[in-house]
Image (cartoon, rainbow, N blue to C red; front, side, top):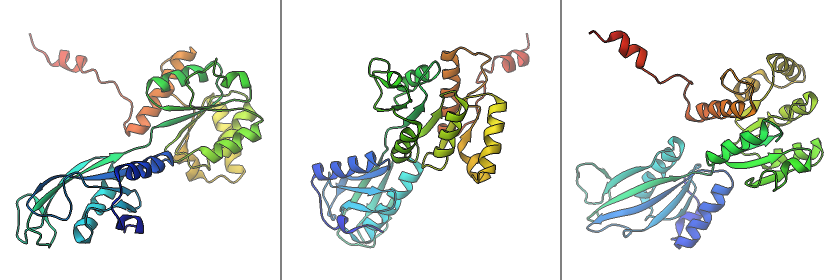
Length: 291
């Protein structure tokens, strides 16, 4: 585990540039920092090492079994999305709450492992009556916004000024560009409305790196799309794992702004790995209350 880049100490600027490069590629990384040192140890407080999700390292905390353990824990932190603090003993004897490194420098180091994640991104194909309020809600939710539509006026800065990426052109051009830039973790929403245009985009993007493809439409539209996808060789498991259609949680409304809220609610439920449910406990409490 690790890479040749991890052999040498890097400046903070070099380390942060590496972190930014990886994050811009859509990868989460861990930043391990020595935050406390009692006695002797391989590196001083403030020493840093960057670890990516594959265990490649940039910079060093001193090498050996100590660093290998830090790298292993950093990879776990990236996968779990949770930071952690770990104490390491270099005393050659047991120290309460500390991992024994087997080394005898004489001190105890504490390492904080933070997780740095890329910004969440939503790709919206079709920025008309529903697509625009969807973009507005996801901007409010701090997503980076990628918009695409065959009509140039629907991706203009005047129409949606806060978009990070704007794509227009023919359907072929848009599909090819989106397949190129869509990355793992992106949410893709197909909201255009025209049947063949929507089908083409779903078929092109369901095999992309995106984990979530949401399609706006009726039950009949979804059924016909699934039939066509299967008949054209798209694996059933891929469809089941990626396609969310009709997209949205039923709020009993056909207003564009409320449909947008329902779409955002389903996306957040997916990201947070929870089933939508009411949180109110009023009825349960009232029913149990005895006068």
